[in-house]
Length: 231
Length: 407
Image (cartoon, rainbow over all chains, first blue to last red; front, side, top):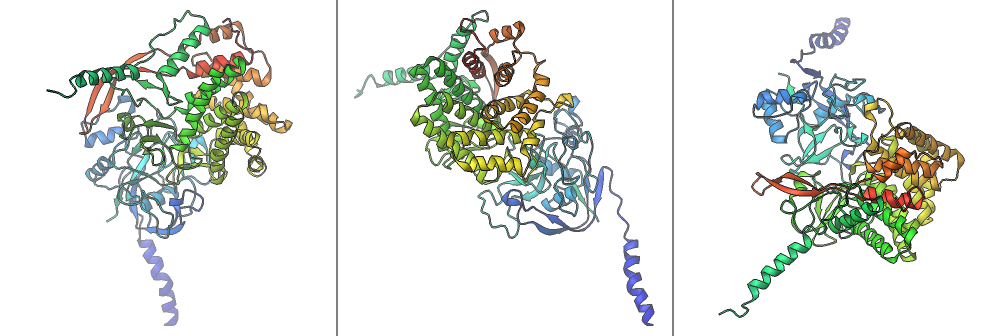
């Protein structure tokens, strides 16, 4: 009897895990499993601190940023040069949010974005800890996913460093435990992530946060990468 | 009937007069066939007359009706480039002429750089540009990031933040040249004080340019703990070398050697020039490298370090030797190369390129001006770019004997 119980103790969790198949992502998306990951940094801007263990539910996230052509399917009045159909779209937060809803998706939270970009191990960039120009789409003439070396994030997302900034659903607020005052904290600015091809290398770090007025993006190139909940 | 019957007429005259004072002041352009010295003289008048923003030099000016009479309207993100170029130009010019009028202009431009610090209200934090206005101007909405602030330290001014590594270079290059060639004892002290506060603040923030919000600026990364461009390593070393030379403060010498000994900035900077893939070559970045190499190589005496800076220069030369003179700043690259190496690189063709230098043409363009209700209005106006690089090139070339005064 005792040995049967011992067997069950080991067998049940194993059978449970085996039964949990990785969900098949919708086309153009990748799967990010539930669980904890390292969020924030100890060496970046004050708003990246404290480094913490955060967690998310499982979700799907777009493999690439939304392109001009994809956005135009939602908004036929949206104009762009034909040669830039595969370039990442640049839009305000409300347009990004409306697009996400139209597509049956939503904008990622900061936690979801950061986990999708760096995985669980606290890496500096989506591909690891060292920088290389060939990993990044720097040139605005280039389209999504065309960096020379094409490095992906741990879950298979491209261009989470460079290309265009990406909207999150979150307001710019301090992390729990952050005591550095910032007058910008609150519900005025939305957080964008991932840096763009018009800022220094440090801005493409996975933990870098930047705030911007949701409807007045000026010349900040900020675009869309959506997530989708798993039923 | 009226106590002051002439008041309306006087008001109209004042308004008209004000407009004529602050509208396009200088309209006389040189001819392309004019000798170089005459072209420089006339573009100098255009720059001082039309681009002078309380001593700071505008990179771009939009005239009425799209631009206002005062304050000046135009792209302002890069104003520190022409400002430092004119500061250097007048410093070189004064070194030749010893004319107090030239020194006065240089002093006034330097005072504007001081004002770029004063307007932020934070010691050592320098603005990209400023404007005397209480109201946001239309170009703030469309011509750069949302980085304009109302000054609390200088009421009635607005200033543009988010300083970059490029403008950082403009400051130590322009102020360093002014200190070296033009400033009297009073201004030497002021120049040293400014660099001490400005570079000192960057050092205190772990080699980052930080903005009013405490975050690193978009292009302000020289930090040894963060990934940054090789060019930024060069710029940081040059800034520390110049600041140590001018202030005599050991902390800058210590910081210079710390970045070299512990973080190998001397090796990192060698590859400032990206040569391959070819489409990544960037002459804009070369300008910042040229200014940094010009400043650091004349001050460094350690042969090992000099050799590494020369390796950097050689990588640039690989590209510069074949550059066509299409931009005034790349004419300067060759002058810098000659000054630093002593090699005579000026063929007759290159000399002709110098003689053919040009400032700008006045263009007419339609501007999309945001209105208060969120709509846009298209307004046709004249605009001017900058001739500061050309003027700096001329006096730099004259100072180093590259340009003949009769050209």
